[in-house]
Length: 256
Image 1 (tube, one colour):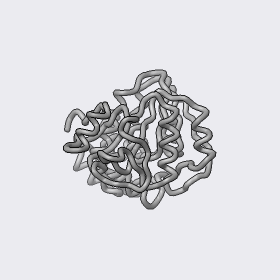
Image 2 (cartoon, rainbow, N blue to C red; image 1 turned 45 degrees about the vertical axis):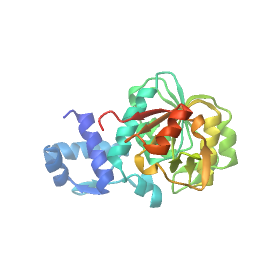
Image 3 (tube, helix red, strand yellow; image 1 turned 90 degrees about the horizontal axis):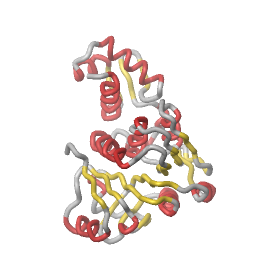
Image 4 (cartoon, rainbow, N blue to C red; image 1 turned 60 degrees about the horizontal axis):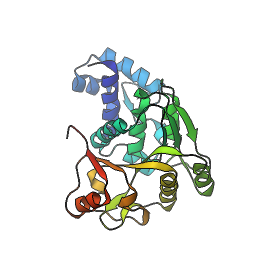
């Protein structure tokens, strides 16, 4: 297993289990404990894990409470969605990326694409971009700072979004149904997503199948405004019909 692939798998294991020992990682990956320790040292250096004596845990930088919890939910599906979504992006493009666990996984996959410009309200995504070895220009949107999700929100953030134009808006969601379309449980996050959609040429939704058929409090956009839906499992029934009618390209992860 090549180092980058191995380290990515270590990060995924830590996120799923929240805390893991060197011995457990060595047994799971069939790698020596010495190699695991070196990998953990490198991953801790770039902020992907937090080392402790004999193992590693989710880094405190990802925050506490709901966002930290979401980082350890449906990890395999979210990573697969992120890897698939990167195929939609080309060099020299500008991207809006909103705050979310799946979009953070997506941001981690962007290092293979050169000369991108990323505009985000997520401090964690901006930090991830700053650690990339690729030439990625990053803009962290200003505004009121929310410590739990490590994001900026409010009217100042929306005003800042309107000073950019982007090729893509890459968004996470709380819910998707055939009547309303895309929804969010947080009005501030819904408003940020709406502003990004207004300033982007295409809109790509990243969503695992748990979001399908749900209802959330605040509408983000209709399905007619969505260009792509990247998901771990294609929706069925009324949602599938509505997506087809709206002309949305549904992209299920290739190895599911």
